[in-house]
Image 1 (cartoon, rainbow, N blue to C red):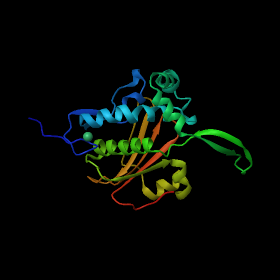
Image 2: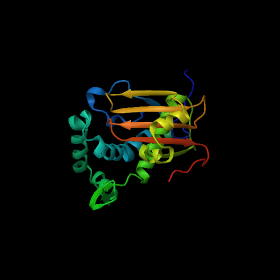
Image 3: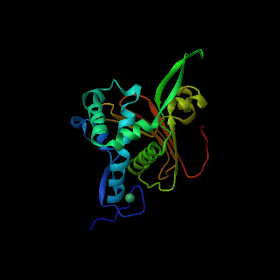
Length: 222
Ligand SMILES: [Zn+2]
């Protein structure tokens, strides 16, 4: 009998394999070599029903991701159909749209445009789960109870300067991979058998996000 495996996301025994990031992010013809981690049935179903579609709809709708082949070929159509299939999908997107002031780089006010507020419980859960999955698969340990701070890489670079400066300070990544022709890519900086780590992830070749995983509140990035 194979050894018992625990769920990546909770303390139950794993009975299924779950995809990280979720399968629904990938166009059908590029669903190869996806990352899977052990999961209990409850977590697998919960994330699939409550988190994955919302996260896919949000991230694929970001301006920086619009031009990616998978979005224009398949994902945008699925996203738009999902609004008519389930009204809660549309209610979620409508609920995170906020008016945002648009200014020139010199600070001249141009007007107000709709923008998505990604700092919400669904996206927090999505990025926490993504970090847990990467740590389970790449580092080989579980990270339940660890703290995940995340944000746009441009926010992080405000504090550390340029990408070159960041790399000078932390060194080259420990691991990295590109899956599905730029549908998802990651770089990770981590030590052996410890969940504490930094990840830079990118969907659809667009905006990059950092995931900073700590056992305590060591760093606050506003
Ligand atoms: Zn679970």
